[in-house]
Image (cartoon, rainbow, N blue to C red):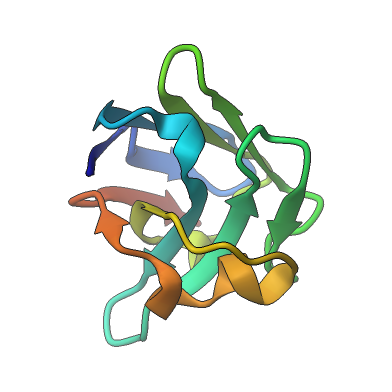
Length: 128
């Protein structure tokens, strides 16, 4: 099993940048496909970005494409989400997640039901 913990959330003004990180412990992180999800108040959890086992393939929700960048460092068992040009609608609790399912394509990363391991979340608040 792997345990996940997010770091780096906080307040930021619209148009600004923020990076959130996820630290993995337990089983080697490179065994897991991983992603970031977010949940805003009163809304369902939604996919933000996903990354393949060794980071060579990434996927993004249309709402963040071109603004957010997902990356991972398996040697350090970490994953990051760099968020630029932030908007008030990006305000949410951001979760990192991981799974061992053998699959490929956008659905492999965007479907929250595929994920077995979740962090506790970190709040990102974008003010206008």
